Length: 148
Image (cartoon, rainbow, N blue to C red; front, side):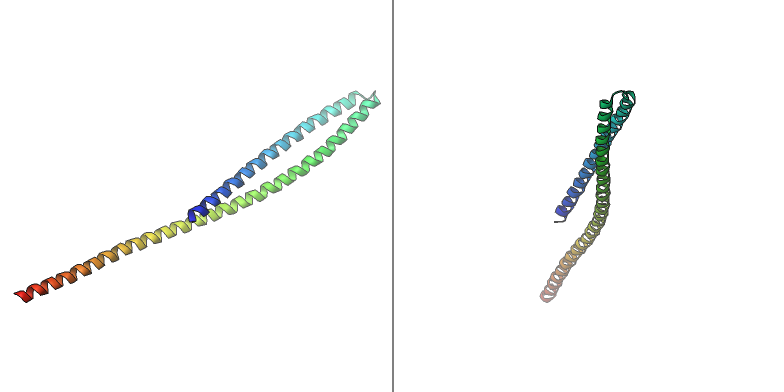
């Protein structure tokens, strides 16, 4: 039962680590998207400065930068959510590590106690055998004395 619990705890620990890895990967993707958006913004700004002569181009650049602004806000909120989730997962991971360490300590103590009980049981059996042997010997000696 303890092994099953230990296995389940390890499974949960590895699952949390996998979630943390996935969260980190998602965070990296979001950061990459944000970098791409920054490059697009710089490109849009340079195009905007070069195309002052055409009002249509200016409107397009304004619209795309507004869209980029909205996308950047969404990405920032996603980054905040991912960071919060990472913190929660890390705190859960720390708790699991502490629980695993304390469980391991308890298992070591129980094993030591079982070893002590086993050695006491062996000694008890030897003492019982000696008692039986000595009783048999006493009976044997008393029988020999009677026949002499």
